[in-house]
Image 1 (cartoon, helix red, strand yellow):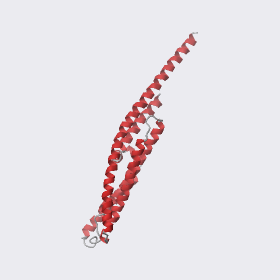
Image 2 (tube, rainbow, N blue to C red; image 1 turned 180 degrees about the vertical axis):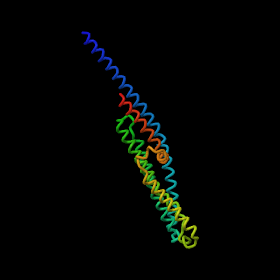
Image 3 (cartoon, helix red, strand yellow; image 1 turned 45 degrees about the vertical axis):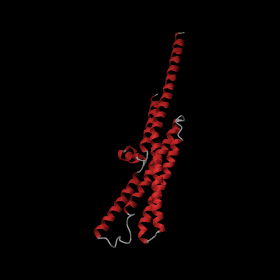
Image 4 (tube, rainbow, N blue to C red; image 1 turned 60 degrees about the vertical axis):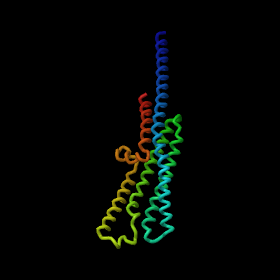
Length: 220
């Protein structure tokens, strides 16, 4: 009889412990969901402001290109090529911002934790890719002001060397950044700071919150 009573007591206590753990897990999930949603509100604001900025910037680039093409002369070749490249890259950036905003808005924080983590990881990878592509425009900011009316024939050798070094440096820097935009570099502070401007910091915070939940589940 005593053994049966001890087993019953143990089963009762075990049930209470499991119930407490289940309640704690539910409360933790709700807390993390609120924290993650709050963190991503910063991303929503950033992407919304970014979309407005992209529209204005693309309108300016579009007008500049339209003017250069409708009043075409060979002197505008550097400008047209450079600004066209910048515009195309920023159109891609604009589309990315719309996509990121839509993805963030469609996260169901009451849903399956693994699904939320998948959505956050997809968002993080897309932000890295976005930042990666945006780096490609850097060299064109060193060539749009050139004109074949005066470059290279009407400038000194020193200026030609300066221009080659300037464009070459920006090209190499752009290539280096493009090559190093990889998820494996997320553990490096400089890379996290680099993608923070595109919303990487907000997403990383949200991912960290859900890692806390994973750690809780492993411990219990």
